[in-house]
Each structure stands twice: as C-alpha cells, then as structure tokens.
Image 1 (cartoon, helix red, strand yellow):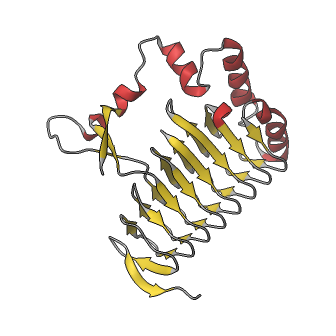
Image 2 (cartoon, rainbow, N blue to C red):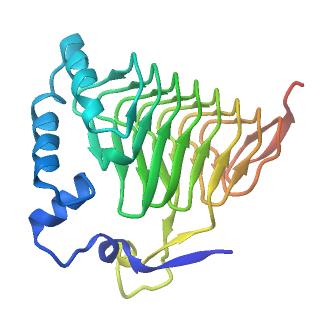
Length: 245
C-alpha cells in the first residue's frame, strides 16, 4: 500500500530554531556544543588530508564520531558524515573519496558489515528505518542508496556504478507546486538478497524484494519483486533466463 508522509521534504527538514541550531542537529543529531566543535575540527582538518597519512589520521580520530568502527578500515578524503553516532562500521571496510553517510532525524541506523567496499562519490542516505549493507558487498562509483522505511542489502552483492536504490519518491499529483515540495511516497522497505549482481545505471524502486543469486542487467528499472536465481533486464525489468543452480 502506497503511503505518503504528512509533510514535504522542506517541511520535514525545517526547524523552528535558528540556523546554527539547525546545523548542529543536522550534522551531529543533538545540540552539544562540545560534540559539535569536535566534529567540526575532525571534518575540517582530518577529513581533507590525502594519502596514507590522511587515512591513518581518520582511523585514529573517526572512532570518536561513530557508534562503532572496526579495524583496518580505509577512508577516502572529503567524506560527508552526518549523525555518526548512529553509524556502525565493521572491519576492513573501504569508503572511497567524497562518499556520504547521512542520517536524517528519523533515520534509525546505518550498519556496514565487514569487508564492504563503497566507491567514490556514492551516497548512503537514511531518512527512516535501518540501512544495512551485508558483508563482502561491493558498491560502485556514484551510487545513491536511500532508506525511508528500511533498506537491506545482503552479503556478497555487487552493485555497479551509477545505481539508484530509492527509499522514497516525491508525489507529482499536484501541478500548482513544484515536485520537490510535494509529499514523499514509499511502498515499503527494500530487501536485496545475498549474492545479487546489479549492473550499471540500474534503478530499484521502493517496496521491492529481490531474492538471492539474482543478476540485473545494465540500465534496468526494478519496480516489482524478483524471485531467486533469475536474470532480469529491461524497463521495467523482466526475467530473461534462469540462473545456474
């Protein structure tokens, strides 16, 4: 069942307090001046440093920010991190340059399991529910993964470059106001099984469940549930071949 939130995204992000309070609650989730100053110092002076020295410093200071941070992680420079106290990162995780980990007010958690790779300029955006990436999954360059009612990506998945996994979309039923000001619509959580291969430029819409061992061809649009062990392609995507047992 399609459900609409009661407010547009602008109303959702609005806050009655001043700009400084809005910024503090956006980046750290609460109004502690001490935590805010520590966050700003780390993001301003540690995050932009390139190379091995920058990564070493990020591994030294980022545990202060995150709820959990495992060992032997690699952090690219110029990451954007919001509400890190609700983010858990496992061991041997590799996050590329200019990646974003963002939780909004109602986002529960971002959980990244062991041995995950996230390509540069990719965005993990959690508006609501939990956003979970299973172990040994690889996410390509310039992907956008969103959670509104929950997003679960299984283990050992491959997600190609420029993929869009949509936690919610805007209504466009009214013509008197811009789409960006209209309510968000979600058909439910997105669940992607284990060992799923997603090609480049694929879009996966809300409320979809994808079974284990599925292969999705480049440029496909997935707007309905997909059973296990099939290959799919097209707009919208349809089964084209049973995968090998």
